[in-house]
Length: 74
Figure 1 (tube, rainbow, N blue to C red):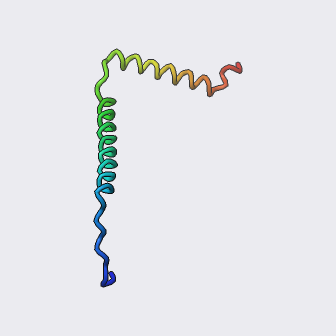
Figure 2: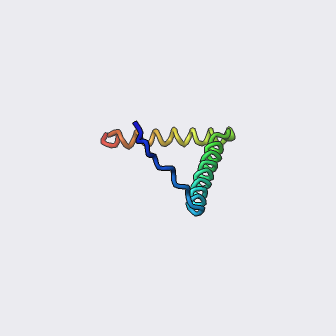
Figure 3: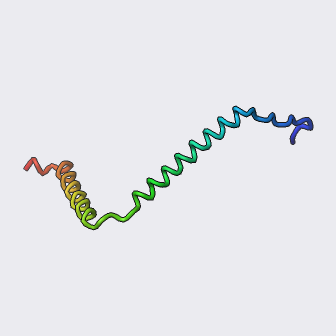
């Protein structure tokens, strides 16, 4: 399956290692930020706020229905 004369892996240079670590840190930091903001959006909202947004959604739905209907032709 494998050839008998496998070359050993070339060790990475110090700069290559550092660059890889920089990329890894950046990736992990981005994941932390995503996780943080994901949790933020799941926090319970005040009741008044929810009622307001429900009304806004209802209005938006009604407006959308009007827009896509031909009620204005009557």
